[in-house]
Amino acid sequence: MANATTTAKISVQDVRKTFQLKNKEFVALERVNLDIADNEFVTVVGPSGCGKSTLMNILGGLEEATAGQALVDGRNVSGPGPERGVIFQQYALFPWLTVRKNVEFGLKVAGVNAKDRRERAEHFIDMVGLGQFADALPKMLSGGMKQRCAIARAYAVNPSILLMDEPFGALDALTRVKLQEQLLDTWNREKRTVMFITHDVDEAVFLANRVVVMAARPGRIHEVIDVDLPYPRTEEVRLSPEFAELRNRVWHAVYHQ
Ligand SMILES: Nc1ncnc2c1ncn2[C@@H]1O[C@H](COP(=O)(O)OP(=O)(O)O)[C@@H](O)[C@H]1O
Ligand SMILES: [Mg+2]
Image (tube, rainbow, N blue to C red):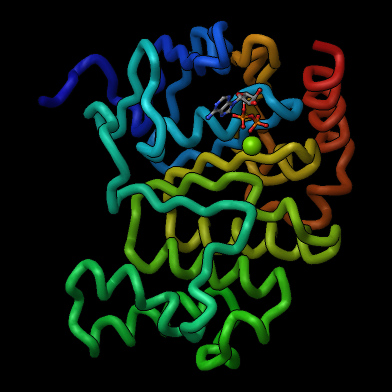
């Protein structure tokens, strides 16, 4: 049944998550409240173990909150759904399928016919700049290219929400910056609601409309910082004093909790 208490695209209400360890309870998330608007780009940053992945897994329907609720489009999350695309740090591509087949996979599962599948896959493969590699197997791709393929695959099934858990965490700094720009470029053209987890403060500020800073023991939201920087986020933006000031604020919130 629809829950009418929110108009937010994503609404996390008083979420608590505990894990049972041997004979004691471990509190991974405590009183987490967060609303994310339609087409908003929110980044989540915080120290290791503060519950970032747990929060994302609850929204992805991979874990269940112990108390409170997670709503998407006003409805309680119960399990994964096609309106939520999930991208993890490790490139979850099928190694025996080409880039094209990987991107087409979700469409095939959804029963899209071969011609439409091919067209849609082509569109998103081009969008992430992998046109020349459509028929390559994942093992022929660099880390950055694999992650671009994962992004194309997530976009292809047309989810209105992208949940990304440190997707660029394993990449070198330069590839990372390029993928950040490309992701924003994609988001500008095909708006989605994005929750993007990172432990990189620069990345958190560069991408976001808002940065959610979490704290650990227990995992909770420490501070939410608005990023009033214009899009497109060019190199000029990245090097601006306003960016530096926001980065310092977020840095301070993360490291002096
Ligand atoms: N399935 C689980 N069982 C027990 N503890 C867990 C489980 N999943 C996560 N945790 C613990 O919950 C805390 C938060 O984990 P996680 O959400 O992965 O943090 P983050 O992504 O911010 O690094 C960590 O201390 C972790 O060890
Ligand atoms: Mg994590």
